[in-house]
Length: 168
Image (cartoon, rainbow, N blue to C red; front, side):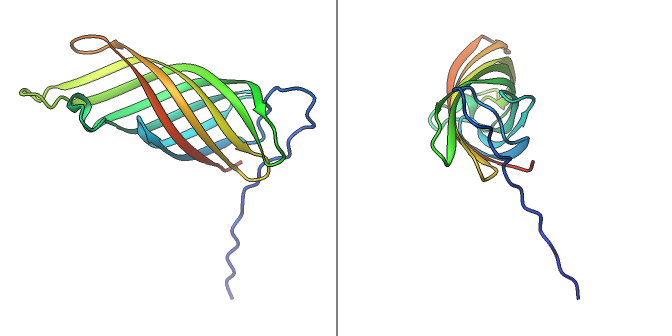
């Protein structure tokens, strides 16, 4: 008889609190995000309070035809300098960072030209980082400043909501 056994991940125990500094109890996670952009997101902790955040997804706002069906990719270096709240079930750290983004889209004007944007991304967010389950939920606002674009510069604020499951 064959018996399949499924391994489950658990968040590592948190250290005893003596300050409001964040300390990660997870390693690598993947999940989904909704907003600008909508797609897949990942996070890899480099140390107790720094991480790499990355995503790939669809970027486009209904009613704004210039970015219909665009592909968005970003990578950010994040710092988690302070915990805003720490009830028993989760920690609520503030985070900010800096990174880059690539946007590729077809313009929906008469010539259907392909535009590529390359720019800087500066996210600011809060995260509900659960203490005993390998999950986080986050809300983020990011300033986007495109430095390279076909016809002119572009700046925007992106807002997204997401969740990630951690495998270690």
